[in-house]
Image 1 (cartoon, one colour):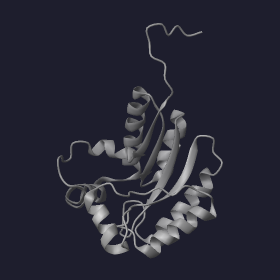
Image 2: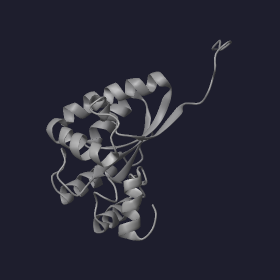
Image 3: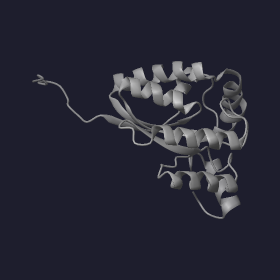
Image 4: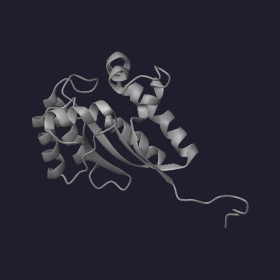
Length: 185
């Protein structure tokens, strides 16, 4: 029996959008619009610094922070997502983890085809795991072509896997959708 007198007891928290290894980029820049932040700071920093080892270290730190704060489940999309899944499972945390696929070279996959192969293997590896739900994660409408968005959807449907993406996270993204798809996200 646990004596919880004078305490608050609540269910575990769920963080519905993370890039967990990016805790290592905390403070890299502040107070910018999304596109400037991504193109001038984050994408270059990722290209220069992100490796599997970086992802493992960032995931361990991010998991420690989440556990300390009461988060028991999270949704993530990043690179080297298999390493994130391994660390998450070791920590005993539940997660929906999406391998990010994008239309330009990134740290773990240099081509769309390589990214899709990696993602399919990732989804197959973790299918049925009690803690890890593997997902397909096309980055965003403005970084993934319509053809590739459809391919990502087809892969997710093939394995009955979730599809996670950025959508409507900034006014620029909404404007992009309206201009290119004649609809709001």
